Image 1 (cartoon, one colour):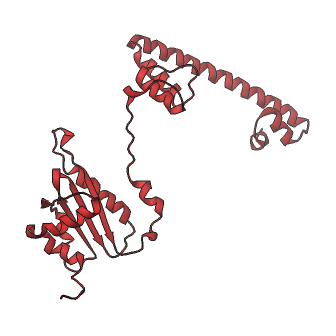
Image 2: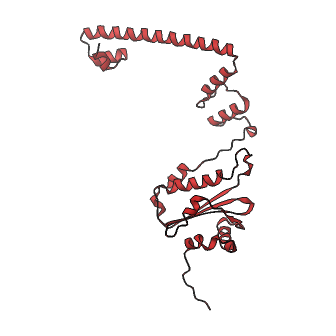
Image 3: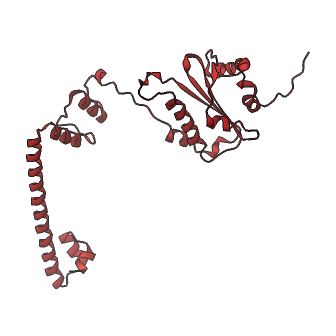
Length: 248
């Protein structure tokens, strides 16, 4: 009867044994138990960056393997922490995704990617929120399924996306600006030019009025200052700052 005894380290096996197709059953078993489904490793996908990490004595091992349905598993075994560990993990997964696509072809060739990090250091070295802060968040907004009932302010945006309409009572941030911009784009070139001329005239008028009000405030401030009224009171009356009044 055999006795329990220590085995070779898994990272050494990953660098040597597990890369042999004859031993894919080992890695397949590990992945099957982790993912809770039957997994069969089809091949080891090597890239230059992955090959470099197989150097004896390095503190991490990277493997990229293809499993059933051409899905990809990125496995990283790391013993020492690195300040950019979280970002590096995200980069590796992103690269595994983008490398699947061939330029000029449809994007339906993209397969699911699993990221597995086996670490031998304290994860508390990284703030818990750090993982969530940099990993992508996906929002699938099915416009056609929207029932057009407004429950939240975001529903106002979905209503706009579906109906190309912004109701008078809508208050969601950005909607008014979107309405103005899209209304402008619906105008003919001649109408846009006329609209621009009107807006320029309005800007000039507002500038003249603002200048007149400012000059009036300055005159009032000067008169009050000449009567030795305190600068704080002058500031409250005119709306000018104490420093502005001191310069008069």
